[in-house]
Image 1: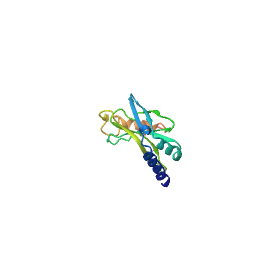
Image 2: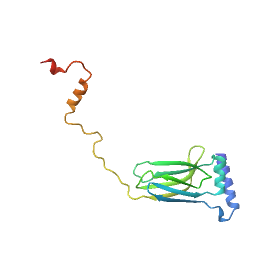
Image 3: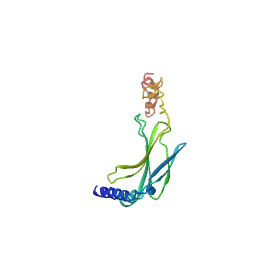
Image 4: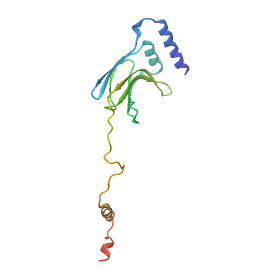
Amino acid sequence: MKQLLFGLGVLLRNSLVKSDHADLSSFVGSLHPGVIQCSWKIREGTKWLIDSKFNSALFLRIRDISGDGTSASLIIETTTSQNNAEIPLPTDSGRVLLELGYKAEGGGFITLEYIVYDLGVKKIETPKYVDWFQTESSNIHQEMYELGRRSLAFGGSEERMA
């Protein structure tokens, strides 16, 4: 935790010292069928922090935030030396959150930039059967009898009576 606070302190100091606007960050996504093409630029101080403390690992994370109970998500790992990537969409409708960030030591995700996409009304498919169980055939008892009889060398009770 001390290292993280130290790194954030260095970032704050660097941002106060540099008052020019040349060190701005940006995050842009271009929506295409089935994928989002992303490009970004991160601040030099942030890049230094991720390079030194988090092994240059930068992540793109996309999640379904439609609020309907689904939890479709995807994470792609990249590095601070890259400035673009392509990430597939986990769903074709609803709302998705695209984040650029890094993972902290405890495994938490630290978001640097984000974009929310509204892909339209969530398409909910109604199930074919209201009941979760499949419908049984009308002659299920005969089928079970024949399945059970395969392993026996002798016939069923109706053959003994004859």
